[in-house]
Image (cartoon, rainbow, N blue to C red; front, side, top):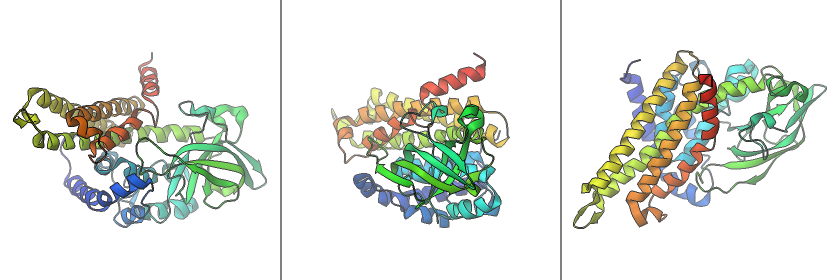
Length: 380
């Protein structure tokens, strides 16, 4: 493993950094205040090649590797986790199964426009009574002639109310259980029986679009089935492995934003006649924050390298998700402490990083679930 970025990675990092700061940055305050996702950022990102960056060039994507994808995610999340999450779903959960298992017709109809930013995607797995236990989903897709009839409810769906289409996980045969009975189906916006019941108000990531969806006798043609019927759960597991590695970049970006804000503030805030950065207690806090971010970054990079080599890395992916998300909790909490009373005031961005970070140990598999996975991979 080479510890130096390639020239292409350095150029790409600078490009996405500039995009995040110049295009996303000015949108953050209003999007967070109104809790309305700035959908115009998706076609902008698509035109610049900043969507689905790891996907093949033949579909119009950048064709980068997993490590470069994490560089991309870190820079997005450093500026705004909420807006960044919409771009991330577009570039991963909402499209990856179409890339890996879809027909060429599905790729041309859904994947290529998503890469260009012309169509917005979402992914529907979580339900009101099925979170960590994904196999307990209740949504069904019953075959009826050359259609599937979908019934069920999905919740906490990023891009849910703005999506042009959603990939839905549903049981096509409950008798076979999760490993042989779950399938993935594409549902287009406007399909009769598919509706957004509400947008969800959240503690953090307020600029992200998060919704609850309802499927009532929603009929979709058979050609909207992604891959093979009954193979949806193995597809999900593979997607989650990649997603958990991506969470490394997501967590590092949020933590890094909090650290940068803390270093600036510690240099400006004067107490007892000198900047608080000159007090040993503050120096030690900043040093430990930086160390933990760097450790999370290299754990993420190694898992990314293993993924790119095609090696089995479920254990490492869960380690990334577990460690990086808990680093984000600690770093943002310390950042709030360094800011003191000002950290609790909405005009200082550190409170946003603190609120945004709280989600990271919960979504995409809780810290508890990650520990179960790691223990299983260890054989215990």
